[in-house]
Amino acid sequence: MKFAKFTAVCAVTFILPAYAADLTVEIKGLTSANGKVLIALYDKADNWMKQGLKMGRTAAQKDGVTYEFKDLPLGEYALSIHHDENDNGKFDTNLVGMPIEPYGFSNDAMGNFGPPTFEQAKFKLDVTKKTITLNLK
Image (cartoon, rainbow, N blue to C red; front, top):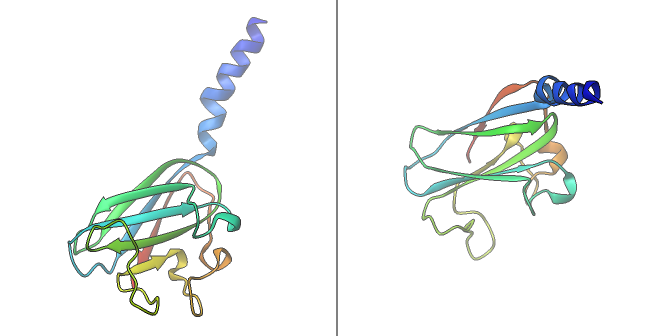
């Protein structure tokens, strides 16, 4: 019985951390330091642009910002980001639904008449530390 407990402790201590990864997101193209940058991380096409797996928020800086997601399982993910310049917690659009605040997606993906698909924006997190760069539009 003691051996089984020892084996379980070793598995948790030495094996599981190898499957946890940190993702650093560098966001470029901010035109002002007003408001916040909102970041949503998705792991499934079913949740894309609906409910993010993890959400992040950081103060805007004109030269760009960095945000880190920690302890993610290895796998496929996609990101959506927007610069909430007026800090109202919404993605503002004009009367016809066109965005009036800067936004971006992983892979700098662009959709046709709307956001890109999860497939267009997805990337592999297959190492324990990864940095990706996104450019706001």
